[in-house]
Length: 199
Image (tube, rainbow, N blue to C red; front, side):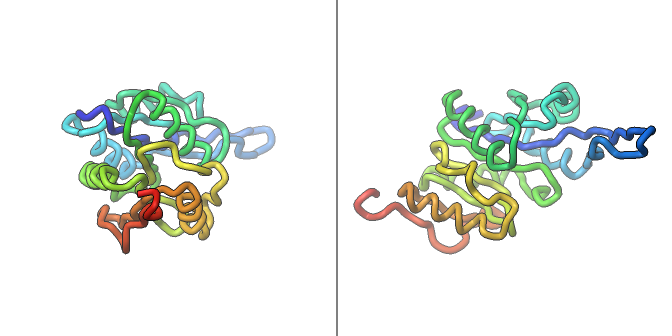
């Protein structure tokens, strides 16, 4: 296992819905176990993996549930309060503070079930050449990662169609190189590089 590489898996604990019987009102959103999510994460946690795994979970009080549900990671930590941008940024910053050299973040919801160890390994190979990798979806990334904390993640329009364009803009401003990967971790289009004077 290469401890220089770290994968952060954002996961939501399978929590049964609770109802306020007196008010006949749902007070907590149901989130049942998703077998495809479990299969995807189990593949990333295979003992032969080439990276360390952190499960960043929510809600924060469900740590025991997540440890039982998704076993085998090096560490488990609660996601901070806030939106997806805050969770991604904070998780990456923690990983770099632990001494990792390359960090990628993936989700575990239904749009991310195609993520495999091979795709993660391919992304880390790209990070030998560029500062950042992006796996764009419609309003999300199947993977986002880099060789340093990425600029402005908390302020990006997560969940909106303009996310990719805004992220590109942040990387250009920071003079970081990056590549965009399709769902097979194959590069899409050209690698965006630093300006020549900064390369």
